[in-house]
Length: 440
Image (tube, rainbow, N blue to C red):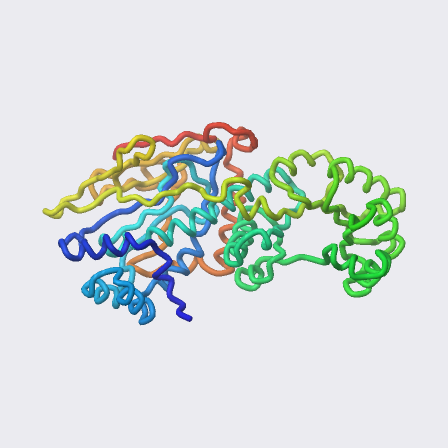
């Protein structure tokens, strides 16, 4: 099977390229921008996700024999376009927000520069990755904030497509989760993995006691026993009888979690298992986690809500042409003006204004022409947000692989500290800081 990612695209991108080759506009230098017009669900900030994955996919964005044969056989584009695509390789440059960075409406998350032919066919793969991963990252960050110092584990693989599950585990870790149940995510991205037993383990055995005893013998007394297959109180009693007061933890996956957690904590303490931790699962989201803040819970396991963006499975990002050469070689800013779907033309620089380390606004400066981008020294009280991601067609490897994941996680946790207090609330509201456009 081909490893090419070139057909992870929509047909109209190739038909536009075909027409541009015919009319001579394919070589015009262009700037495309990936951004979000708004934050979904009245959220107060977004988290950039998918950058490292996208760079890896761009390395394989080549049209091999299988892809070219399909395009010919399906009559997708002309023979001339197929011939052009034989040697296609993105030769342009991409700058953008680091993975794990926060973003707001209008933030120029990715700026893709190159010929029209170079850049137009990257639209779908870029949006596929960034929309999914940023949605998961934003949901995960909200859950991480709600959890505070209590650890979170991602365990939603069975609620997503197999590839999406691995991507979601990656983003949950970058945005503050401590581990995943997904072994492929652990292998591919170096994320810590966790997991012990499901209800089927208890149901397999002739008694709950037999199941607990076998698990403790296999995994040691520091394991976590799932105590709600039958009666929770009896399960807790059996767990301590089998493992002793040094049992590592119990997991609860059902019931009124605040009430059940309080009862289980009291029972564990009465049995002398004061150090046994309580992990809760059961369809948690950021709101349920926040509601458990005062409960004696030690850790959370989150599944469906994190891998589906907690009700908002896409970040709603778009990829638009914002500047191009004209027929005479001059530089022209362009923008869509349709009501509700307008964009801001021009090549841009982005900075985050800070007051005593707290973010106050997103500054987006629009260049006058092509070469007049603002520099960090132009905004001494702001942090520059864009970094090189692809230079002359070559992805910057620092953002890829397990090392890129760790870097993105550290960056996210660091920049999250810049958020004003109002950004941490879970209720619907305007973005935590305004986006301000400046002309260079």
